[in-house]
Image 1 (cartoon, helix red, strand yellow):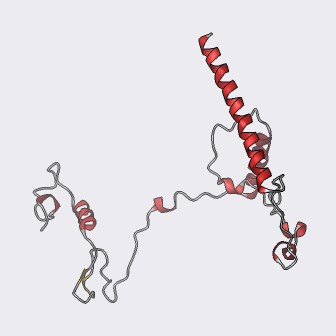
Image 2 (cartoon, rainbow, N blue to C red):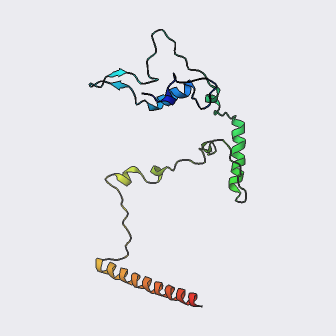
Image 3 (cartoon, rainbow, N blue to C red):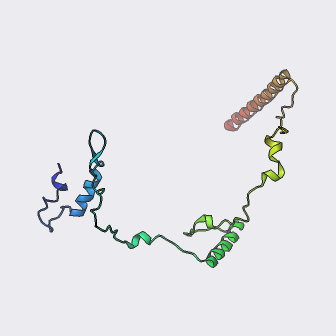
Length: 177
């Protein structure tokens, strides 16, 4: 059941303040609808509001609206090239800053010839990378055995601890001075 503010019948007069008009009430009722009504089998018994099929012989017509086409922008090739040249000059100069951004998409500013794809297959062939004769690079550990590696890690950690102690002492001296 609809409340008094959502009923079209209960409108007292057109001049009264605070009374919703017919289109507002329809829109608000549309928000409340949860889709079509279905029976136990899941078949649609009653369609949802604004989903009713058009009657046979009736021509469906959408009202045209100018604001639908207001955001489209066109640009001539000459203007685009001029803009690309000016933006290129500004990008190269670190002392110039663009304050007012243009509404031209940034994707149009990049030239495809300057940002060409890197051809990896020209430097490393697919067979050398993934084939039966593949060449794998090994990690450079710098030690022969696991024991040597443990000793090297111990040396590095002791050096690091000494540096930290010196830094802490320096900080303590600076704060007391």
